[in-house]
Length: 93
Ligand SMILES: [Zn+2]
Image (cartoon, rainbow, N blue to C red; front, side, top):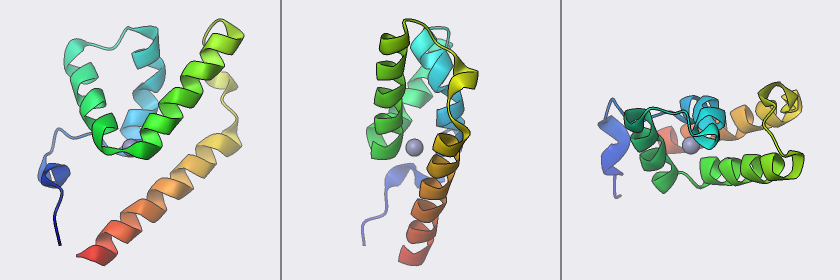
């Protein structure tokens, strides 16, 4: 079993934190340090990458960002997916 090296790093973002940073990231207002963490998380997380792409498409479609317009059911779905991932990872230990 290969253990991802990033797992024990405290500075690694959780998916929930990454999702919360997506709007700032796309707005370009994320501090360089946070942006680095965000990029590092995306490199290892297909789910957040997909979420980011969806948000980017949404913004391009709407022309501007309305964070509060993200449907609650979408956020709920993400949380559910991420919980399942975490459970799968625990099961691997
Ligand atoms: Zn993630």
